[in-house]
Image (cartoon, rainbow, N blue to C red; front, side, top):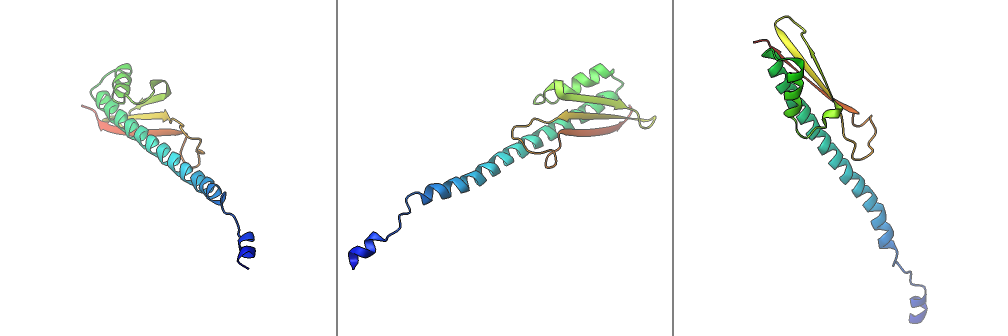
Length: 127
């Protein structure tokens, strides 16, 4: 009777590999999503800093080229080819600088989850 029970025993040799494959897919998806969110947050902070630096120079009466050079220079982690800078005066006593940056896509996350571009604006009174 003991030998018959041994013959009907199920082998679970490949079950661990299948379970690992299923769990690893989820874990790697989460890992790459966290990396993408972190890098996008870094880019957003850089864009916001560039906008603040640009509006500071614009409030001092610098030319548009000088404002753009200082704004982009304040964010060395950004690709200057993907930066769009707009300067406008919403009121006669203040200036507004808006920077838009096409985000880096490390992982193909749809635009519904993360926007394709990052924008930040800063307003300051004229000096």
